[in-house]
Image 1 (cartoon, helix red, strand yellow):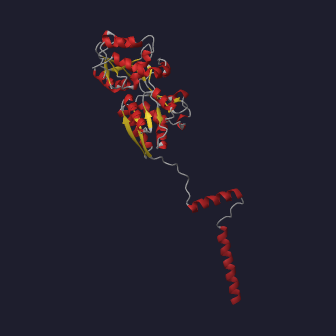
Image 2 (cartoon, rainbow, N blue to C red):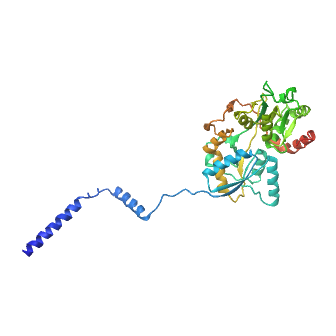
Length: 362
């Protein structure tokens, strides 16, 4: 009896084991799947995570002549995407920005990390002296080559044109020529920015001086017509909207934005041409904060940055992001030739003669 009981118990245990084994099918004989499963299990057991992208951090100094409110908004959008990068902004007219940089250079080191203002000739001088970092931004991969200066040492990030802005409540017939600003309708009510302060104004002055149809004679006619001066394009746009000035030489986006906001102003694209105002951005070569500086350049050239420029009223350098309300198609804009060689060689003499012609310019 005891022997029979033992045999029966052994048989019962064998049956239970067989039933438990049959509840989980054996894996298929596939060495590839078995290897993947083993790797997956090993990864799960070790707690390994996919490699995370490094978030760039640091503080950069930006020297710029951009409109204060617009550059503040642009940097705020940049920081949303790069929260660990702080940007300290020094903002003034192009002339003041250059003076600050020259003083710092004399003292031993330019304190800016990124520079962005309206004097492409000065950028060229910095590049020739190996003071600008060559940076192949991934966002410039499909950028028109004309916007990547000297093979990526500095970039154009959006387009600005100097045009005629006029007050539609004061001037019923739109001007068609730069020479109209020297006419009776604008006498004592015409203004330009001081080229010793504004980079856009100096670019315009030098371009006109180099043009056979305008030259210094044009500025003498403006003087005889009671031309006034403002330090910045922002002041011109504001006083044009208020009616203090009937016509001004000013950058296009400011008039376009004022018009879209309801001010009685409009843009005239002169028959002689508008003046293209390069306002490049570059990184100082010995910056101690190159990585966050590169992030800022990347952002300005990115789809997000370009769309933000459109939102601010600028014409972007990447046409696939659209264009601001009221802006013309680029292929319809007539522009003066950009003669950087002439400007570089005659910069000092042009400024000297301007001061002699307009001793009261502020």
